[in-house]
Image (cartoon, rainbow, N blue to C red; front, side):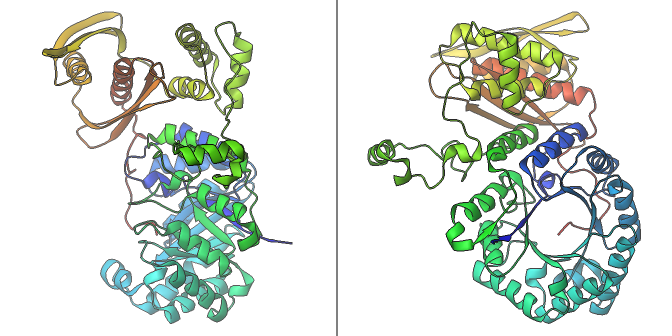
Length: 518
C-alpha cells in the first residue's frame, strides 16, 4: 500500500500575502469551498490576529467548510494563539499552527532572543494551543538556515509539549533539493520523538526550487507538503500545489506515494484563484498554463496526432482541462447555459446568471464557435461585479495612423450623465484619462494586463487592472469583451467602483501586527 502524503493548502494565508493578491472575505470562502472539492487535507485559512478581516475569514470558513482540517496561523504568543482558537473553534476538525524562528540570524536580529528563550517559548506556545485543540502544528521558522542540532532541540520541545505536526520551512527559498532532502532525513533520524508526529515541509521559490525541495522531502520521508494553488505567495511564491500533486501522480513509479486530491478539480481551482486574486497564470506554467498542453512544432504535432503519449506525459482531462467545445450556441436556452456554468465551477445568483446569459447570447450572435473558456470568462466577469456607483453607458474611440487617439465616454452616476472627451498615447490611455476626469476619485493605475481567452480575431479579451488609493490599498477590476478597449474600460470602471465603495478587505497586504509568517 503506497504511503499517503497530506496536502496542506496555504493559498488563503501565505498565498494571499503575494504582492498583488487581494481577496475579500466572501471570495476566501468561495475558494475554501473549492479547495474542499479539490479534497486537500488541510486548509490554512488565514492569520487570525493579523487583522479583523483575516479573523472573520477564518471563522467563516471554519463554520461553513466541511471535510478538510481548518487551520489558523499564530505566532508563539498567547494572544495570537487565543485569537486563532476563537476563529477555528467552529470547525469540525480545527488545527492551530504556531511558529517561532530558530535560525541564528532571526533569533539575534529579529527576535533579540537566546536559544533557551526560543525553546521555552516553543514549549509554552504548543502547550497553550494543545489546551484548545488536539491537533497542533509547530514550525521552526527559517529551519533550512538553522543549526541542525538546535533545530532538533526545538522539535523535541514541541513534540514533548504535544505537537502533532512538525513543519520544516525553507522560509527564504535558500535550500537546494539534495540539501533539503538530507535535512529531512537527518531530522527523522536524530530529532527525539519525531516518529510520533507527522513531518511536514513548507518551501518558498526564491531560487526556483520550491517544488524540487518539496519532492526531495517526500523521497526522504516527509508526510505532509504545504503548497499553494498556482504557486502564489510571498516574494517569488510557494511550492505549486498542482505541480507537486501531478509530479507525485505522474511518477508514481518513482515516488511510490499517493494523495487524496481530486485531480479533475485542479484546473478549475487554478482558474478561480487566478480570477479572484487578479494574478494571471503565466502561459508556460506547468500543468495549468495555457501552453501546458499546446504543441506548435511540426514534429511534435505529428507525434501527438499519432499518439498523445509521444509528447504529453499527462492527460489534460485528468486535471480538468476539457479539450472539447461546449455544445452551446445562439439557440441554447437558459437552463442548458446555467447547467454548463455550474459544471465549470461558477455559482452565480439569479441576477448574475441573467446578465451572463444575455452576454452569452450576444456573443453567440457574433461568434460561431463558443468554447468553455468563453463561458468561463463571462461567468467570472459577472461573479466579480460590485454595486455600480459609476456605470459605463457609452464609449467612442478614434485611433489610426497619423491620428491622435481620443475617446468620448459617458458614465452614469445616480442617473446623472457625466460625459467628456480626452486624448492619450493610445485608445486605452485616452479612455482611462477621460474616465479619470469624470469620476474624480484620486488613485493611480498600478497594473494593466490583457489576454485573449481563445484563438482567433473574434476571441474574447480579458483585462485585469489594479489601482491604488492614496493609502496604497489595491483594488482589482476585471472585464471581458470581444472589443479589448471596451473590456479595458469595463475593468477600469469596476476597479474604481470598488475603490469608491471603500472595500477595506481589498488590500494587497492586510495590516499585520508584527512578525513575519515563516
